[in-house]
Amino acid sequence: MPLLTFDIEISNIFDLAPGEDLDRYGPFDISVAATHIVGGEERLWLSTSADGTPLNNITREKAHELLHYLDEKQRDGHTLVAWNGLAFDLRWIGHAAGDMATARRVALKLHDPMFQFFKLKGFPVGLGKVGEGMGVQAVKLMAGADAPKQWLAGNHQAVCDYVIGDVRLTADVVAAIDRAKQIAWITQRGTTSRVGLARMRSVEECLGDPMPDQSWMTEPMAESKFTAWMRDAQ
Figure 1 (cartoon, rainbow, N blue to C red):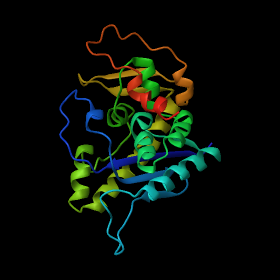
Figure 2 (figure 1 turned 30 degrees about the vertical axis):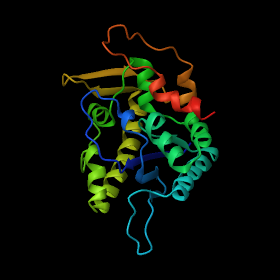
Figure 3 (figure 1 turned 135 degrees about the vertical axis):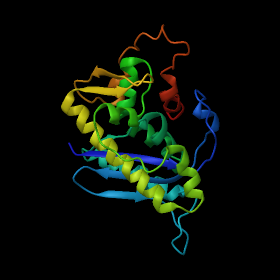
Figure 4 (figure 1 turned 45 degrees about the vertical axis):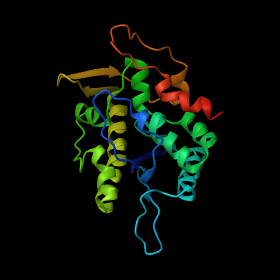
């Protein structure tokens, strides 16, 4: 099945302390999004003023158009993939579009490698650390936390280039995982760890798996951090 990766950037500016809960700063506004079909089209999703200047946030109509596009592609047989797309991207696309029910439906069939990893290990891992562990070469054009500041400062092209880079990186990392049948990542100690991954699985499949042992963690993350919004969307 054709692979479609997607990613959003937000326009909200805040300083997130280490270990701080991102959700306390929500709800979030989307500045720009990108979609990438491997071997096919690549699109940017943003809203503009009458003179073509990008707006700070995408409109509800544009967000709905993006959500409809993802829903339609998924129904047509594309495999949708987003790193942390369950907890973040689809949640806030649905919020911006005013259609949480469709976002929930798309999320259940989504392939989110980070959520699948979480159900295996009990903690999340970032795309960059996995890319490095898998040997995928990538040039990060900016830190993710800088994207909202750059967008609001008018550096729209730089942020567009950044989000396009992330959807391409996601596709490359997923391809590497599929070839290796494992996820390798760089740990906080700077070492490389690995966990087997026979195949990518949908969120719906992963939800049926038991949680791994988290008894060794001081502050274990609950599965509800990823899924609570879907219960509210029913």
